[in-house]
Image (tube, rainbow, N blue to C red):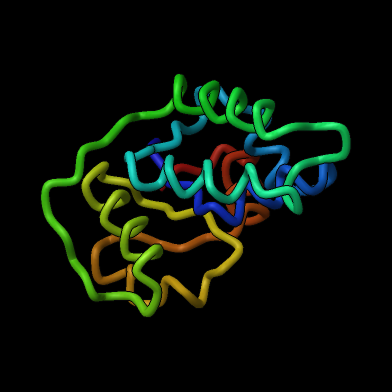
Length: 142
């Protein structure tokens, strides 16, 4: 199953090894899901994860970029040929909604569920990393 990870998931995984975000990100590659990626989302991930406040102790921006290249190597790369903007309050979230729609994803995994209100109109569900991890751990499929 294809899913989109909001940037908040990667930031949470970088900040803590104890949460669901880290468990999901560190499971890649996995037969349970495949992350989807667009050029715009990759650029956002780069910007966020190379900020000093998001780098784990002892890590550099180059380490973060290497990790992002690893994730990109396991991602479904999706071109986006149409825009739904404006639909959500934040244009960066519209970019994620458009990617999820273009890649035929059922789930947007995010810590910011409220920001994706209305995505169900496109057949998607915003779900927290904890909920998504629980769902795939139980073998549930959409």
